[in-house]
Image (cartoon, rainbow, N blue to C red; front, side, top):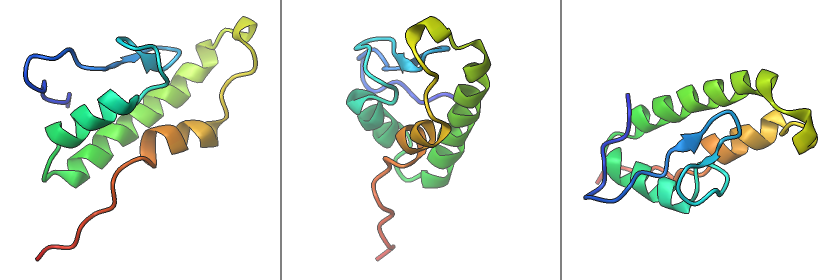
Length: 94
């Protein structure tokens, strides 16, 4: 399950195993990736949560290949917050 492209823009996808954006080098999901994901999964909040959950699991499994020369590995909670906790709140149905 990959996000659908938004118009003709390049998608801001993660660069593994460091989990920064391939386009802007910000921690993934960057602001543009969040916007792309919100648009791509509009009206499909559960699918977005499943996609992000899969990305979180992949990010955690990439920790075993993390290069210690880059400093200490990222904290698992920080990765969870970054990948899973940015979604806008669910709006109740009218």
